[in-house]
Length: 131
Image 1 (cartoon, rainbow, N blue to C red):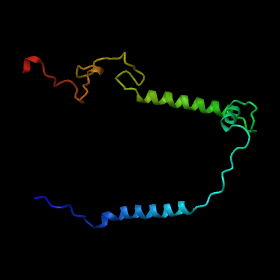
Image 2 (cartoon, rainbow, N blue to C red):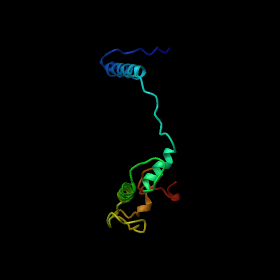
Image 3 (tube, helix red, strand yellow):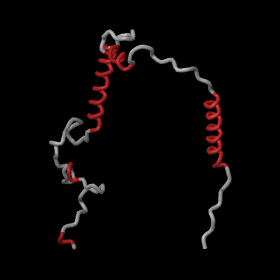
Image 4 (cartoon, one colour):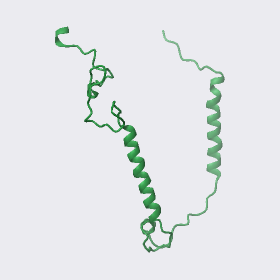
Protein backbone atom coordinates (compact mmCIF):
# COMPACT_ATOMS: atom_id res chain seq x y z
CA UNK A 1 0.00 0.00 0.00
CA UNK A 2 1.36 3.44 -0.86
CA UNK A 3 1.25 6.44 1.38
CA UNK A 4 0.42 9.97 0.40
CA UNK A 5 3.29 12.45 0.26
CA UNK A 6 3.29 14.84 3.18
CA UNK A 7 4.25 18.50 3.14
CA UNK A 8 7.22 19.15 5.39
CA UNK A 9 6.97 22.52 7.03
CA UNK A 10 10.06 24.26 8.27
CA UNK A 11 12.80 26.76 7.62
CA UNK A 12 13.38 25.61 4.04
CA UNK A 13 10.10 27.29 3.01
CA UNK A 14 11.30 30.81 3.94
CA UNK A 15 13.14 31.53 0.64
CA UNK A 16 10.10 30.42 -1.36
CA UNK A 17 7.77 32.61 0.68
CA UNK A 18 10.16 35.56 0.25
CA UNK A 19 10.13 35.03 -3.54
CA UNK A 20 6.32 34.98 -3.60
CA UNK A 21 6.18 38.15 -1.48
CA UNK A 22 8.66 39.91 -3.79
CA UNK A 23 6.58 38.86 -6.79
CA UNK A 24 3.43 40.31 -5.22
CA UNK A 25 5.16 43.62 -4.44
CA UNK A 26 6.61 43.92 -7.95
CA UNK A 27 3.30 42.97 -9.60
CA UNK A 28 1.48 45.61 -7.55
CA UNK A 29 4.08 48.24 -8.50
CA UNK A 30 3.86 47.44 -12.22
CA UNK A 31 0.08 47.22 -12.32
CA UNK A 32 -0.42 50.51 -10.47
CA UNK A 33 2.13 52.49 -12.54
CA UNK A 34 0.83 55.07 -14.99
CA UNK A 35 2.70 55.69 -18.22
CA UNK A 36 2.35 58.71 -20.55
CA UNK A 37 1.12 58.31 -24.11
CA UNK A 38 3.79 57.09 -26.55
CA UNK A 39 5.59 59.94 -28.33
CA UNK A 40 6.73 58.32 -31.59
CA UNK A 41 9.29 59.71 -34.02
CA UNK A 42 7.21 61.96 -36.25
CA UNK A 43 8.05 62.09 -39.95
CA UNK A 44 10.18 59.40 -41.56
CA UNK A 45 11.27 55.92 -40.64
CA UNK A 46 13.41 55.39 -37.54
CA UNK A 47 15.14 52.42 -39.19
CA UNK A 48 16.19 54.54 -42.16
CA UNK A 49 17.34 57.29 -39.79
CA UNK A 50 19.55 54.85 -37.88
CA UNK A 51 21.10 53.72 -41.17
CA UNK A 52 21.73 57.32 -42.28
CA UNK A 53 23.28 58.19 -38.90
CA UNK A 54 25.54 55.14 -38.84
CA UNK A 55 27.09 55.87 -42.22
CA UNK A 56 27.38 59.70 -41.93
CA UNK A 57 24.60 60.47 -44.42
CA UNK A 58 21.94 63.16 -44.19
CA UNK A 59 18.58 61.62 -43.34
CA UNK A 60 15.00 62.72 -42.72
CA UNK A 61 15.57 63.02 -38.94
CA UNK A 62 18.61 65.02 -37.77
CA UNK A 63 21.01 62.88 -35.79
CA UNK A 64 24.64 62.49 -34.79
CA UNK A 65 27.25 60.74 -36.90
CA UNK A 66 28.15 57.25 -35.76
CA UNK A 67 30.49 55.94 -38.48
CA UNK A 68 33.61 56.05 -36.29
CA UNK A 69 31.75 54.41 -33.40
CA UNK A 70 30.43 51.72 -35.74
CA UNK A 71 33.95 50.94 -37.01
CA UNK A 72 35.42 50.81 -33.50
CA UNK A 73 32.70 48.40 -32.38
CA UNK A 74 33.36 46.33 -35.52
CA UNK A 75 37.08 46.02 -34.75
CA UNK A 76 36.44 45.15 -31.09
CA UNK A 77 33.90 42.44 -31.96
CA UNK A 78 36.18 40.88 -34.58
CA UNK A 79 39.07 40.84 -32.07
CA UNK A 80 36.80 39.22 -29.45
CA UNK A 81 35.69 36.57 -31.96
CA UNK A 82 39.29 35.78 -32.91
CA UNK A 83 40.28 35.54 -29.24
CA UNK A 84 37.37 33.22 -28.49
CA UNK A 85 38.34 30.91 -31.36
CA UNK A 86 41.96 30.89 -30.21
CA UNK A 87 41.00 30.09 -26.61
CA UNK A 88 38.59 27.35 -27.69
CA UNK A 89 41.19 25.41 -29.66
CA UNK A 90 42.49 22.22 -28.11
CA UNK A 91 46.06 22.49 -26.94
CA UNK A 92 48.43 19.66 -27.78
CA UNK A 93 52.12 19.56 -26.95
CA UNK A 94 53.10 22.06 -29.63
CA UNK A 95 51.44 25.25 -28.33
CA UNK A 96 48.07 26.97 -28.32
CA UNK A 97 47.96 27.57 -32.08
CA UNK A 98 48.44 23.98 -33.18
CA UNK A 99 45.63 22.85 -35.44
CA UNK A 100 44.23 19.52 -36.59
CA UNK A 101 47.38 18.78 -38.59
CA UNK A 102 49.24 18.08 -35.33
CA UNK A 103 47.91 14.58 -34.65
CA UNK A 104 51.13 13.64 -32.89
CA UNK A 105 51.12 10.68 -30.58
CA UNK A 106 51.01 11.49 -26.90
CA UNK A 107 52.78 9.61 -24.10
CA UNK A 108 50.23 6.79 -23.99
CA UNK A 109 50.50 5.97 -27.72
CA UNK A 110 47.15 7.49 -28.70
CA UNK A 111 46.66 10.29 -31.19
CA UNK A 112 44.39 13.30 -30.63
CA UNK A 113 41.64 11.66 -32.70
CA UNK A 114 41.57 8.39 -30.68
CA UNK A 115 39.23 9.66 -27.95
CA UNK A 116 35.98 7.74 -28.00
CA UNK A 117 32.55 9.35 -27.83
CA UNK A 118 31.73 7.70 -24.51
CA UNK A 119 34.58 9.56 -22.81
CA UNK A 120 36.98 6.64 -22.77
CA UNK A 121 40.52 6.87 -24.04
CA UNK A 122 40.39 3.77 -26.25
CA UNK A 123 42.79 1.68 -24.14
CA UNK A 124 40.11 -0.77 -22.97
CA UNK A 125 38.77 -1.52 -26.45
CA UNK A 126 38.03 -5.21 -27.01
CA UNK A 127 39.03 -7.07 -30.14
CA UNK A 128 37.15 -9.91 -31.81
CA UNK A 129 39.52 -12.46 -30.24
CA UNK A 130 38.45 -11.46 -26.71
CA UNK A 131 34.91 -12.84 -27.09
